[in-house]
Length: 544
Image (cartoon, rainbow, N blue to C red):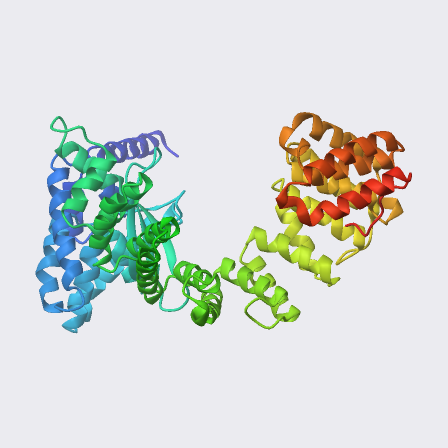
């Protein structure tokens, strides 16, 4: 390449670089580009909008316009054109504005006019989802609460509940409960920091501004999510009458959150009432609010009300009403409902005992990542000598998070060879791992020590190790030292190590501790064990 040509190319590159830097990025510049038909970044549009000096006025105007749009979006499509235009004049990156203008032009059957708004709608949603999942830890960004609701509506979901939340990481956010066309209610979280910042600027120097002050301000203006938040806070302070007033106001707009909190408040009142009529009145309020929540699709309400029916809160004649509610919740993938049904079919409580049905519900709850169900299913398999390799995989997954009970159950499954090849060595390894990760868990230590002391599987016994961990527990935990079941294990470990004198002494303590009324059911067994030690015999039983 000749020298003149090289110099010319370098100069061209430099000039181009300087030209790119000469145009500052601003909201006005970007909206001008949009007017000229150019494509701009949604992220840039949002960030430059948030830098505007009149941000607080624009946000206030945006909230007002979007609220109007929400009120008429389904009933007055011809009015959407002027409101949508006003919204985009205020903030062109408004999802609400583009959504209602698309609706407006589609209503007029103007496909070409609707197309750019449909594209903007898709781009805004894509931008919201680019670095967020909608979880509490990683919420979607939204300019306003209405935009959050319109996001859900634009995806074919119906908002049924909302409440504002605040914490150190997110000063102002919203939990939005939405009902898809099919399936259970979903929880979506949105970061509304832009609203908080705008309002903070507006009230700067006038009042001591805080997220809670903003929620209070919004509640007085009739914001249902704010009213629910105020109600929940007052309920947590035991100011139940004030809480009820705010929550009733919120529930009148069909806010599932308000109904759920009201039901819990009246359930608390019912549990504290000694007057039968007042108790019944409180339970009627519980029923009314849970039925409202059930009608909105709340599986939590189906589960809670179903359990109340089954626990005889509404009379023996209504007890059976709980079963279909639990089944409805389980069909919508409520894992606790499935777990409750599994237990009922296993025990034959309120339904016919059916181990196959119980197993089906245990599996359903386990597949929904219910850790309690996974552990309960393993105990079910052990008790009924059934095999399911999935149980091993589920427990190992829990064990990776240092779940001691899952390790204990893995030990039991390996010891008995249920769903896995029998291996006393691996069983002992899991037992020791359980003790290692939970050295202060008396229940875990006691169960491991008992199994390794009295098991009928000779290759499983580890009497010296069992005595060591029981010595440590009983010397450091006064509560365990006073319980007959722990004293019983400790005495058995001493006997298994040949120290019958110490075993008798400890077991006599266990007998005395078992004289308390709550231990009447185990007293006879403990006395039998004492007789065995006095006769120089150890304890052996089927364990695990």
